[in-house]
Image (cartoon, rainbow, N blue to C red):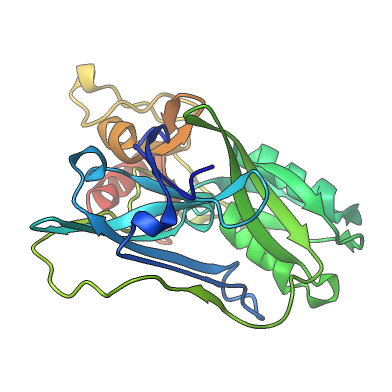
Length: 302
């Protein structure tokens, strides 16, 4: 089996390499001891220029003896003369930030039940693999991302939850995305691998960081008794480009999206692209139509 695979934006394998074909390959994995992040996992590779992979979007690394790969989303691609170099981040942590949980409030539920419930509510195409923690969970997950939800579970120190993320590849495509949860993974240490020499000069660079293709807009909380309850949304407001609106936004949808951006930079899932979502809040907006307009205006900045 090849050690390193390059994939396109639809997560289809373009080309495979053995690690000894690289000038440099640095993989850094750190599972943090606090809940500031799920995992710090980056990859830096350099190799002789290859036209086939210069526009690749992902890199898969078989860093274990199993059939599973670690997958990285390429953030920057640089080329000079006959050299290509890529900086990438574990795509799981990045991808899970764009799946939004609307409202899940488990009470004394098993750890595995809660994770599966969160995955279902967010529309996430990941599955739960190994799950060691057995204590029950009572919490609230309200308009938050899968990434933040898993961080919240990790913050429950008595559970001792630590997450890893992997994929399975069959043929030339990803067939499974897996979240593993353990009580503890090894020792508290960093794991670093280095090969070859450092690349010094940058001639051309593509930056693919901080991509969002859709926004969920939330306005002022509705007055309930002595305080405020749920925030207003624009789900009941419809936009049609045929009526002069800037984008199509059907009734019942609580986000607005640039479909062309999703097509190019979305989350690959079963042969199609899902929008990369995040939530924006406008505390002073009380009208749903105004909220939709302001959310659209904000989307232009992403």
